[in-house]
Length: 332
Ligand code: ATP
Ligand code: FE
Image (cartoon, rainbow, N blue to C red; front, top):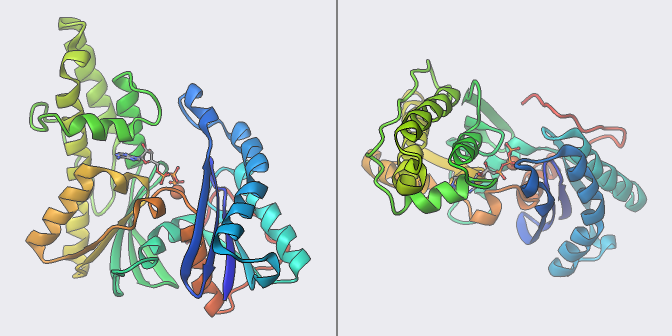
């Protein structure tokens, strides 16, 4: 079974080819244009997708050494995401499926982030828990099978990636600031500034209070010393990262305890964070978990994860009608 998958939910245009569940190519064109605006500008993202999609698909097919005529299905991200961005991928995939007379498969972007864990060995066995931490989401997902996933905890305000990016912005770092906080944190003292941990019931998360406490803390310190941030950047970054990571891992530990599940994965762009990776590995050792983190290229937005999800849907002949439309929000 040969599947071409398209991802265009936000600001990265992706195409991947998968044969019988193996990813043969995973191409991504990232959009630089948004950096100067400090965030993704939806209209510019849609236009860049239109420019990128044909070349990205071409390269994905070439790299996999697959001809259009060999495809058995075309898959695309149907939701959630920026509607203008999703429309470009959807329109492309539908046109291609129609002209090739092949089935069309729709994929839920957040389910795909979870199933990215099934791409390479070692793969988690079912059931497993997945902490999905990205620019727009923070979720704990209970995954019983590729067809049975349930969100058991999620953020009630900002996502973890947003918490990183907004904190970075308060420190005067460029967008997206998450990777920069990670970089400076490596050389800092994470116990220097103990930011508060919110008290949120159940398995849900909140990051907006942390952002406010960082803002007030920086204002007060800058009043005393104008160069406070420059002089203490590494320790501030390490302390912020430490708090975000402990908020995430404490809830994950709670979820494991409540469900009795010890197969634990992470997914999404923030799973690139070294503090989170090390923290998960250490916690897992202490609690006897099997832990899994996808390769970096399958953590941030990518079409490989769309392709693997589509492969499982293909096995169940779960095809979409050609009249299907993308949606900005989506049920699970
Ligand atoms: P969503 O999937 O919710 O629609 P997204 O796909 O835009 O969001 P991703 O591409 O998965 O998000 O992740 C991007 C986020 O990951 C950004 O917020 C970025 O700052 C963060 N990020 C990437 N690398 C790191 C890192 N090393 N440390 C902390 N955060 C990071
Ligand atoms: Fe994503």
